[in-house]
Image (cartoon, rainbow, N blue to C red; front, side):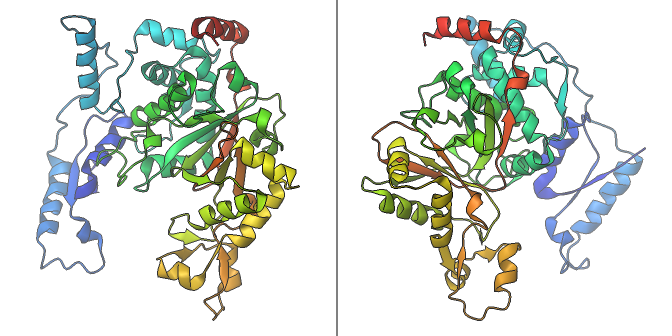
Length: 441
């Protein structure tokens, strides 16, 4: 049946990306200026509406696709030498928006098969068809291909599959919409807990969110590449219309330093046992450093100042914010008798802005619990918390000892935790032993 897609001019490439994800090589467009959709548009003044009507008629009666669907072809790249062939591959991938811009490891058949030894889950199992804007099928094989290109190893695959699994849930798709389809500045941050952190040598100490660790670098990058290639979340008019972006969009993965944590680790708070291995996904907005070397009261107030300064256009929000406490700060707070609950309560009671201050900064009150409390308030000096409840502040311990520097990762939506163990293969211990031998840890 003939059909036409009515598209605002700014989103022509994005619609094509979504169509291709559904197996449509081309579609009949009718391109309107976005002003045409506004209530104040007057047809007699602007004739572009007439042109779009002509496009609709043409699309329904005469239009033919300009190209056929591409088969799942085997791509072959040649060059004067191996590096020349790799360079040609990377140039082709960049032109097709299949890359993050960093050098790629060729995803040869042999390398992908090697990555797939990291799980017993069948390679053709469809994990989701709901990752927008592309909305194509994400299979175990799709994840393995992107892991191969990122330079990952087989034993990293269970973490990636668990992350995709949780992002494919109803709550996870809300996170994904922020990361992959929003114009705002977000990137997927992965926090690993449980035995798998040490098994894979995922950094939880010095430089925890920086370079120098294969597992951290390639696990985070593999997820980012998957979102680019599988979800269509590359920056630009054909993908995600994000205005700027984050360095964390290249890679963002770290483990909690559970040995230095005086309280329950993140995954135990989420209902898992200490022996379980998990990955938590959150849409992060970068890091806000909190440097201080004094005592517990000052550390608490630095956290308050950071949370109060979260630069979002709403307040009283039901969104998770993550404090990454340096071990030194965690130990000082615990020695002063603080628990995670007391820290959350203190921050919630003190990280507040007046309605006047918020409105002056263009912030809007979230339509949840605090709207009802302030609806009839005439005194605009009333203080309202940045987040809706104390529980919205999540706390992990990570980083090196004696650093005196913690960090706040502002977020949006709720972070989600997934079980990694269910994706481990029967030969898991063999994989770990091989990795220990090959990587020397």
